[in-house]
Structure formats: C-alpha cells, structure tokens
Image (cartoon, rainbow, N blue to C red):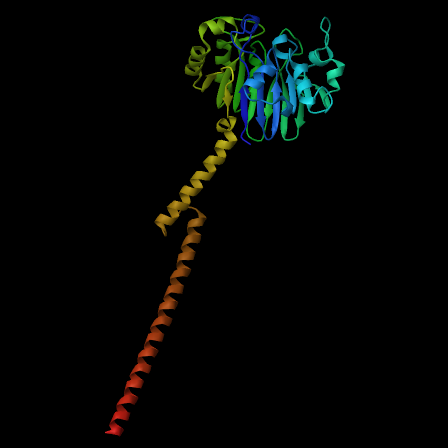
Length: 339
C-alpha cells in the first residue's frame, strides 16, 4: 500500500474555522496498512467522507491538545471507528488534558468513549509509544494548553514531524531534526509575533536549521489567509532553500518520494545497474576495485580454456588429415593391384 498524508482541512484560528473560510478536520496518515487520524476538529467526519477516508479503518486517533479546533470530533471519530463500542477497536493517544482534564477543564474524552477502544494512552513530552511498526514520539510544544504536544512519527517509509500548536523557541529545533517531512502549524503571517503560535518568520528559522526534505505549512489564521498561504510558502522557500508547500483542503501527498531512506535505496539501486552495464560494454577494461581483479582472473582462465580448445581442435584436424591421407594411400595401392 502506498503511504498517503491527507489534509482534511487547513483552518487555524476561530476566525477561519468559525466561518469555514477554510475547512477544518485534521490530518489523516495512511501507511503500512494503518490509518492515523490526527487532531479531528470541526467537520472531521464530513471532510473524511469527502476525501474518501473511511473512519472505520482508523487504527489510531491522536489529539495533541484540548482546543476545539483539534478535538471537537474526537469522540465522533471514536464512535465511527468502533460502532460506539460494539466492536472495540483501535487506540487513542492524547495529551494529559484531553484524557484527564486539568484545573478548569474537564476531560475531553469521557468514560464511555474510553471503553469504545482497546486502549487509551496519555502521552506527554519526551515519551513515546509503538503501534506495530509505527513509533510515535511526543514533542515539546509551547501553548496555552500546558500539556500540549507535537509529534514525531517513525514509519517504515518515512519520518514526519508535526509541530502541533506551539510558539517559537530555539530549544524546540533539535527535536525536529532528522525528519523527512516537517508539518508546521503557521497561524500568523510574516511580520507578526505570538508566544503560543508560529508565524512565517518562525517557520524560516525552524526550516533553515532542520533542513527537511519537504516542509508543509498548514493551520492558517486570519492574517495568513489575508497574506495568501501560497505566497508565504514561496517566501519561506526562497529564504530557506527547502521545498515548502502550503497545504490546501483535501490535499493528498505521497510521502515516500520525500523519504531520505527511500531516496538512498534508489541511489544504491541505479548506480549498481549502471556499473553492470558498464562492465558489459567495456568487458576487460581495468577496474580499480577487487571486482576488476576477479574479472581479469576470469578472463585469463577463459583465455587458457580457449587455447586448450584450439590445441585440441588443431590436433583433431591433424589426425583427420592423417587418416584422410592414409585412406587415400590405401585407395591408390588397391588401384595399382587391380591394374
């Protein structure tokens, strides 16, 4: 199965998702036969249907923090994937606030929906969990939900970092390194500043340091919509030298193409074929490595075999001639006797 990242919606702040200037609903990742549903916000099930995503196939639901635009349809997705508990299925991974609540906030996840799934895991910064061959690391995030997290996903095909909602701090950069794809929630356009959300200027700092194969900006606020996310992405790409895409509602991306590991596999494959072609074309040309020496030995053996074959062939020809001459002599003698 080809891996996919599906952006159900790209709305960020309440001005955008409240008026549905952009759709919301979260991100779906399909990889290795598993389906991850990240931050199912307003309209998640509807957007899933429109984008061809079957919530019943969901393996893991992840909520990075307790805000409405990230969890409003968390329980609806759990109900859809498990038939409201009739078929207990899947895992819920969420930060502490979503699972347990904090002072002033009740848990987003009620007891009923906890019983609808096989397991509920409360994940905090620095912890990790494995789901079959997928590993999920919780990253530090600076937000007004004090337990908010980002994500680093290790799959067989690619490594993806998702900042979640966070403000900028240079100490965050290290945790995003060595990823193939970096997804950043960019609420504010360049020139703006926030302690709890990223701006385009913050994206430049992070991407310049991390240097992923691909950076994707999403989760746009009012100022980003006004500035045009695509234009902001172009500015970021020009300043960082890294390919940057502004996500659109319903955008589907194949992450395998941007995987450094997959690229390395392709690099290892094609030169090998090229070398083989070169050997076939050049034959006995001198090589620098030991394989060249082996080729010489094989050529020498082949030459000796050819010489031996030629000697045998010549000796057989001589014997044939001698026999022929002998036969001719016998015929001559017989003719003389008859005469």
